[in-house]
Amino acid sequence: MGRILIIGAGGVGTVVAHKVAQNADVFTEIMLASRTKSKCDAIAKAIGGNKIQTAKVDADDVEDLKRLFNSFKPELVINVALPYQDLTIMDACLACGVNYLDTANYEPKEEAKYEYSWQWAYQDKFKAVGLTAILGCGFDPGVTSVFTAYAAKHYFDEMHYLDIVDCNAGDHGKAFATNFNPEINIREVTQKGKYWEDGKWIETEPHAIHKALDYPNIGPKESYVIYHEELESLVKNFPTLKRARFWMTFGQEYLTHLRVIQNIGMARIDPIIYNGVEIVPIQFLKAVLPDPGELGENYVGETSIGCRIKGIKDGKERTYYVYNNCSHEAAYKETGAQGVSYTTGVPATIGAIMFMKGIWRKPGVFNVEEFDPDPFMEQLNKQGLPWHELHDVNLEM
Ligand code: NDP
Image 1 (tube, rainbow, N blue to C red):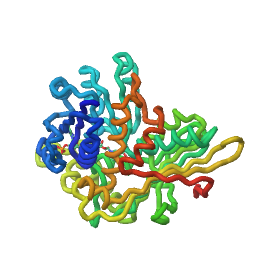
Image 2: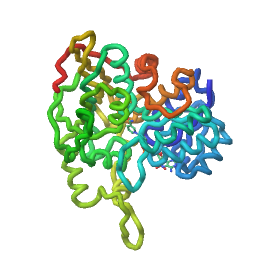
Image 3: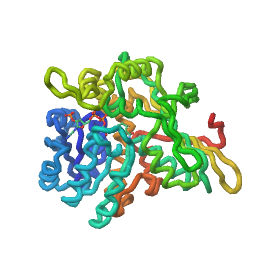
Image 4: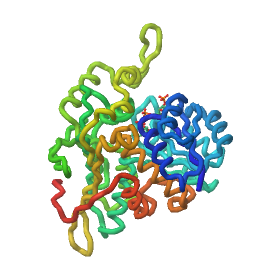
């Protein structure tokens, strides 16, 4: 049906490449491009069958992107490089008439600030040229946003309380490692907590609100309120929400390491001079930490991510819990990547399928909850992320 370009050959790019190749009826020509071409070649070789072309691209450079877009002529680009590259890739898409999909909102390198303002500002430009941009199509944001839209469509007249709950009960056997790009991950989890209540944002100290939540097939795990980017679009698109929070599980060991990293200045994102060379401490830290893409081999256990929602249907108060559990071992067996990369790469591929089939295609810039959730939910079951739902249960909130 169409030509697809994947940018980024990390853990998530590995999964997207596998999944796109499995859907040959939808994706007729596939190219995987990244900063380091040898990584693309290794992924293409593992998939085999000459299904994937590879290329080198510097996604910080609009001209380099334009050169690649004009030679390969993709219909859609799946951006699974880093959030820093979102705007340059969107600019190149506009210049070359290519549609766009990503899994994380733009972040300036010098400031860890999670907001959609920069990308929403492209709305008129995409609309004017009839191109579609699909934002935040990983698991969270992504599936959690689709889960919320599905709940709103089928089970509630008004949703009032939303708690997105993200548990990783996996064990990779390392003293400390992050499950995706360490720089992006550490920036995200060390920021202040923030949630939506009664029409305004409430800010807390990092990890100040926490309690044990019970996860299906896993049991109780200490969970912490952190800010997560989908909250911003969800409270805008579902204005009946009185409160929206995001909870993530962390082990004590992980939190102790994080505290030390912060206390000794290794989480700093501003440049310092070391031996006459400018370095950014968190980027140096990334270079010495385990590569998230290499964690898969010994990773055991599973993730459980879902939405817990309370609201009103036909005048009655109802509760709803929709979730997916994903096994790290099964993800590794299928794609050579661990569960966190898998739960991000599969939804990105499904978003691309939605686009290619013309189901999620409209001019402008959209968060995933603005599209019909039903066909996406159907694909989750087919592409490796089956979901389950519980009605009128105790949400522990
Ligand atoms: P990795 O760090 O493993 O991979 C990033 C890839 O992007 C690498 O191959 C890297 O190249 C490449 N890259 C970086 N800069 C450039 C550049 N300037 N030009 C071209 N390529 C570049 O990250 P992950 O795979 O773990 O994560 C990918 C994305 O997915 C991130 O944006 C992350 O925030 C997002 N994500 C979203 C989640 C969700 O649920 N929504 C969850 C997890 C991740 P090189 O190999 O040379 O370093």
